[in-house]
Length: 83
Image (cartoon, rainbow, N blue to C red; front, side):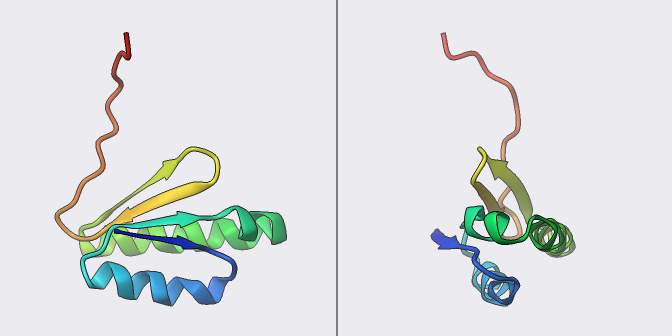
């Protein structure tokens, strides 16, 4: 697993390379969101389509992060009770 900060659209290729190496990537997106929300939307959309195309998965982790998984690793999205 690798945690990275997405500061610019140029960071996307490095993220894709890590996923190709079968790493789970947690991306902190706040710096790019503060700089350019539209650019962030485009990057997240690109990462979504990339994850789908390789059989990986992508999900939001709170307000600041997204997680992208390599092929064969799925993210559980079920609701559960913490009582």
